[in-house]
Amino acid sequence: TNDLKDKRVNIQALINDKVSQALEAAGAPAGSPAAVRQSAKVQFGDYQANGVMGVAKKLGTNPREFAQKVIEQLDLDGIAEKVEIAGPGFINIFLSKTWLAEQAENALKDARLGVAKEEQKTIVVDYSAPNVAKEMHVGHLRSTIIGDAVVRTLEHLGHKVIRANHLGDWGTQFGMLIANLERHEAQGGDISMDLSDIEGFYRESKKLYDEDEEFAKTARNYVVRLQSGDEYCKSKWQTLVKITLEQNQHNYDRLNVSLTDKDVMGESMYNDMLPGIVADLKEKGLAVEDDGAQVVFLDEYKNKDGEPMGVIIQKRDGGFLYTTTDIACAKYRYEQLGADRVLYFIDSRQHQHLMQAWTIVRKAGYVPEEVSLEHHAFGMMLGKDGRPFKTRAGGTVRLADLLDEAEERASKLIEEKNPELDAAEKANIANTVAMAAVKYADLSKHRTTDYIFDWDNMLAFEGNTAPYMQYAYTRVASIFKRAGVELTDLTHPVVINEEKEQVLLSKLLQFEEAVQTVAREGHPHVMCSYLFELAGNFSSFYEACPILNAEEDVKQSRLKLALLTAKTIKQGLDLLGIETLERM
Ligand code: ARG
Image (tube, rainbow, N blue to C red; front, side, top):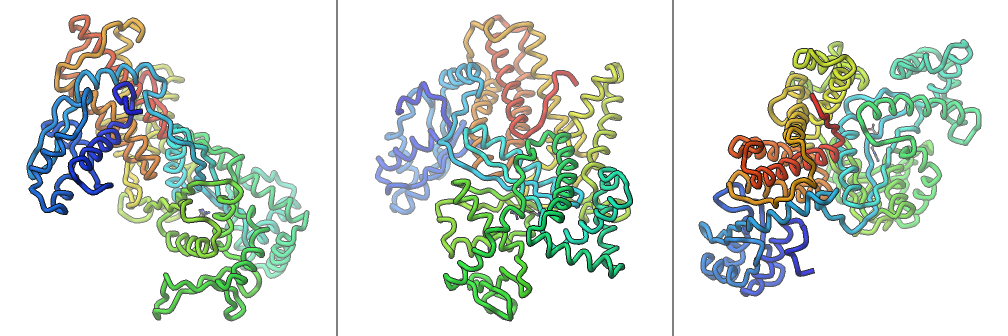
């Protein structure tokens, strides 16, 4: 495996390895970080190693002299053509043009563009998780979009990914919902029509519950019956779940989100585990009775009086809580699903909730430390005014309405840009651009911060937006198409002569690093930034390096770079769940 010349690898990892070895050979303690990064500027080469200074300081030697020793030990034969010391002791690495060209040829020949599969792990991803009889709103949109992009990326790297849609399908609200469903059925209406506005149905149920004592009594009775497994109540409950799922599926399909009914693992799934968990936590001395309720006191969390915070896992009336379910759920994912990693894409406001649940999970030994439970939190979606995103009347925005508006706006835009296309193609372009715009606007932002939902921004053809990236793809792809050739016609090798060619190619070969970073950190914006920079590098290359009127050998080499760019953009967008168009 040391013959790295023939192997397409994550270049950053490869160089990092090599510099680490050299550091040690030069006398650094084992495991000293080489800290190899992509260089920020062309004059600093393709990569730079920043670890030397830290090690030299520890050893008490002159960093530049130590850097020289490291370089003497550094074996980048055939990979780098120049290695330089810069500033106080940075090592700048300039990749060999021949080596880069070889990598390009390998990537072109491979459907995976040379991106290697990772050692397979079982990874559970908890995302989307809307609630039954509630409209999916913009809050679920972020979880759905970001989670789906990470799922696609993990699968691409060869992992076994289990999509877990933690549907909110349990709770005392089902009493009133069942009672109201029964009422509608008695009136002989069309149930799926009646429930097409499910949020309205929910509000109506709540109003009846608050105002009609008879109704409230029935509702309370149904809660008890549902919880004890009564068939009648269960079938009504199932009707509500089914209708909600159909509506959600419609949103998922429109958005090209890969979730289906098969991925639903709702809260109700864990019901049977809950009494056992409470009993076990009591037996382990973790849960104690407090004022009739079962509580776990955690030293890690203090209440406002500085005392250990009590997390209720069973109420005085016997009811279980959201936290109890998440404890059971983590245990299930490890024990039954065999998870090596569990990723949760949930609003940052639920961070404390998750940390409490997982602290209990770890203390009880339900999930071993080596299995990571990761909260990939995200901020809120805000309106242009910087306040939580709401309708003009102040209500939550229905996801379906939001998607309709995106389509309307994109239609107008395409109408202005391409009035000559036929109606069907225009509609297809508008639809593809609209969904991509909504998704990309979310994916391209660092997810932990709140973000401002702004139609004009997300539909702009300039900047780091979906229309820009989709257009970049069509443009690059059309250059290749205009040449009227196939890859197999290109018999001349890739040759790098110009700086812009080198910059573009070096960026192209960093695709794998972007894919792996998204998989590791769950941050799809890394892929968006990568693709945006790649598109920029291509533009500069295209400006400086004519393709179609160049000499045949140069032309072929550049066509190969164009083709690899098109393929990389397409695959990158695909991993984000964004579709491309051949014409727009
Ligand atoms: N249904 C919840 C909500 O709408 C999100 C569930 C997230 N997943 C979890 N395992 N708690 O807020």
